[in-house]
Length: 66
Image (cartoon, rainbow, N blue to C red; front, side, top):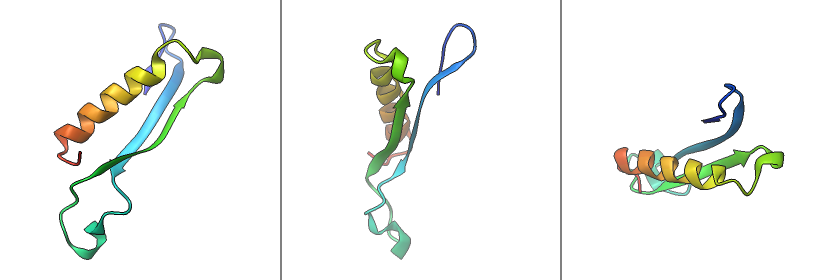
């Protein structure tokens, strides 16, 4: 989640295991997916989405699904 200096949410990203991976069949999921990245429309072009993606990819790597 991206928070501005006033404490307002200005963006967020949802991520997890790749939905097309066969993990539902009991296999280990090895791929990750960014399901939904969102940035407040009036704040686009300020690098918020890029930072959200950077943090999301780091989390996926830590969870070993990238």
